[in-house]
Length: 172
Image (cartoon, rainbow, N blue to C red; front, side):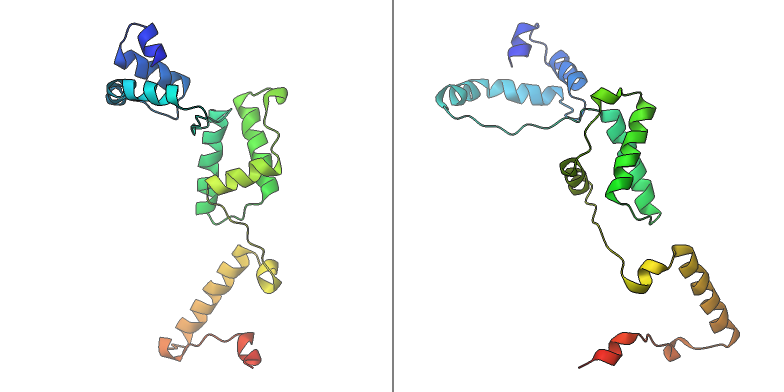
């Protein structure tokens, strides 16, 4: 509100100013109008509150790297590739190189950064055990194709197919 009053009281220009400064917020003129209508109430609340706290929208330090990272993670997850923390860190560094960010301005890529990034993108880490860890996706696809060819060759009906694994051996 202070910027609005100090710079000519133009709602559209105020929205444009803060959209350039904070590109992730996207303020529009009707929002400025609603803030102006409630400005008196807000000033009273601000003056009366001794321990005023407010949450703020956090801006990323390097939005262009974040956009590249988000796009890459979406594409990789769609392809079913397993991501590890180290892969995410290396990819962020590579995108920072492409964006031309100097080494001393880069993020530290700590475990805290990694945890928050995985939380933001709803990424989970799964460990593969036993046979699942020893087989590549290509081998599994090739074997699935081979089984389909065998089933077609010997004309096996679907009702005659059963899933059998070791769990039946350990029922008790």
